[in-house]
Image 1 (cartoon, helix red, strand yellow):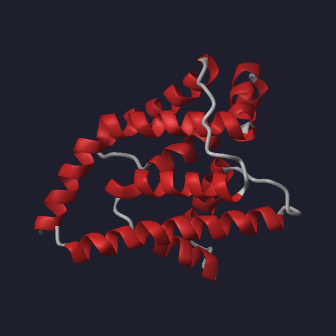
Image 2 (cartoon, rainbow, N blue to C red; image 1 turned 120 degrees about the horizontal axis):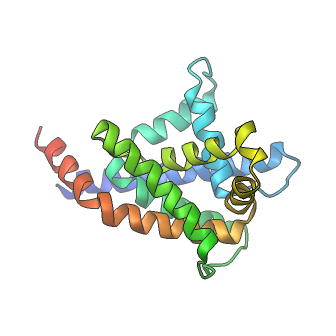
Length: 191
């Protein structure tokens, strides 16, 4: 890959991170300047982008930012957004130790990713895995189950646990799918 192309890809990661950060700020403002979380931002971004009739300038910017980042760089973009989010919200750089509860949610994120791969032969974006996992948590039937409601509360509502879960998930995702994504990226570059 040429230096020019690599610079363009890194710039697209930067653009996506900034676009997500802007959306996070707007989401917090729209919610009375209350705090939001990384997974709430991701869920709302993907929800907004999924509605084809939604053709606002903001949605166009989000779609464009995602379109510019190949799947092989989604982990880098997401890690960059997470770090930026925690720093800009004065939440520090420390990641709390994991426990059985955070591991359960990390396992669920990986199961979502693995199931998608098993059924389609394609790697699911970590953004989509987060969206699908949260979507499963917020279903009415799920919230009636105390265990699932507690998991949802931990993942969506506990910002420190959320950071641990996302760090563990992204590390496992990279270990499991990194080579596949690099191969696909190299094959794409040859064409």
